[in-house]
Image (cartoon, rainbow, N blue to C red; front, side, top):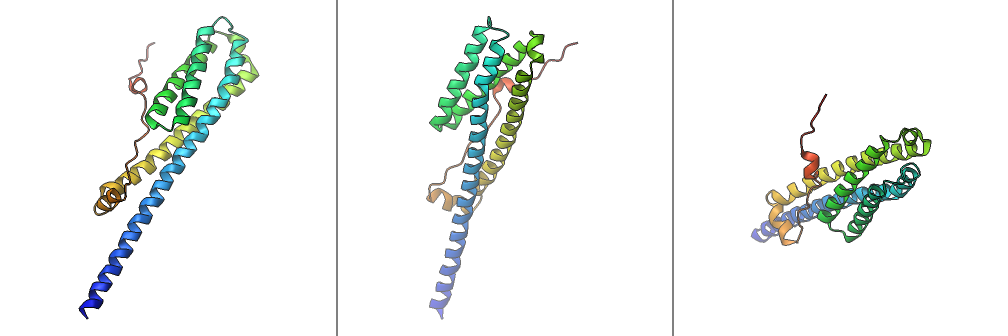
Length: 185
């Protein structure tokens, strides 16, 4: 009789451990999927940038430094993306976002450029892509939160650490984006 009770306890524990393991794997896969979604949107943004730069160049050819900065930032972001280092990638993407702002600020100085249909279409596509990147980052952060929570609660924390599961880092805004915007009239 005692043997059956011990065997039943072992079977129940095995089911619990299998359930915890499967939940961790599912959650990890959701985080990886969310990261992949970010990757896809960043690739789309990287593909749009050369077209945007070429369109603006036709109107503001003497702004070579701005174009060089945008292209360099794009190249750094692309190489960071292929490195699979999330911190390096976040920094490079934040630099690219800052460089893109300079292109749109430059457009304010050229009324013909602001009226150009090609530029307007590229600007809309880029804005749409930026919105999708933000949504993908939120989705990623939600999945990271859920996965990290599973790794921190008892008893999954013991089991997860034994199996080598590691917490993910959140996507965070760059320091300059966190600063208060000064509104002046």
